[in-house]
Length: 224
Length: 115
Image 1: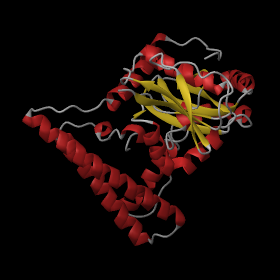
Image 2 (image 1 turned 45 degrees about the horizontal axis):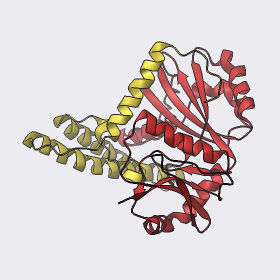
Image 3 (image 1 turned 90 degrees about the vertical axis):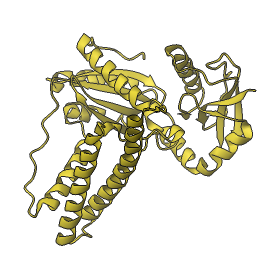
């Protein structure tokens, strides 16, 4: 018995042929009100191998070339049938529509920051009060810090007009120090890369590597 | 992936691979293990994950109220001490069961990870 494999949610029906999916199945489009789902009918859940992950990425890239907003869905998302798909998405349609609006016309660039050690955290500000007050102040600082990449500051000015949204993940095992995901307007990737290249000297002693453009994988976690 | 790629050092690739392997191991579906010791550890992991989840929620709320200026000095101190002791307790109990802090998490399937 086949089940429905969900690849992506779109802002509109793709003008192009949707092609085939990870199991070489023919993909089809399911209209769900103002959302469009791209699905395939598969016999069993494909294993997450390099081959199948690349196949899923190829599907998403094909869709990105045809539609303004493509919300990638987690690899291996299966539902029983189209009715179950509609039912599972119905309560979340407003937030999914908002997520599609956020990524519309954009693609993802990934910056990895490398170095022997991270930039030093700012010295803690002296906090008056007892251990509980100091603990809470420290936790507040730590929460702010995990969303910051001071190593990338020299590139900020050049990127300011190109980055619509940013996601940061810090790592604690050098030389990989941080992964930064940027949502960049389509067509601006060349300028984005020029801005990074122009800032490389100022970024030392840290190095950055850039990959992309990608479908907006890092910008769908709350929604899809 | 048409972006320009400056050369990446081998140790940088090793570092990236280690990070990917760490994340993949966290995403692995836990399997049932009939070893009694392992049962205790699994239950402890689940319970401590839920406690840690609640602790982080309380911490966020406390920080939000601190920033909003709706906590008095005494309340800030009391909440801070309570959260500090709760964190120490979770770490202590996790350590007794050989659990690393990053193991205190749950994969919620399509909803992502709990923490």
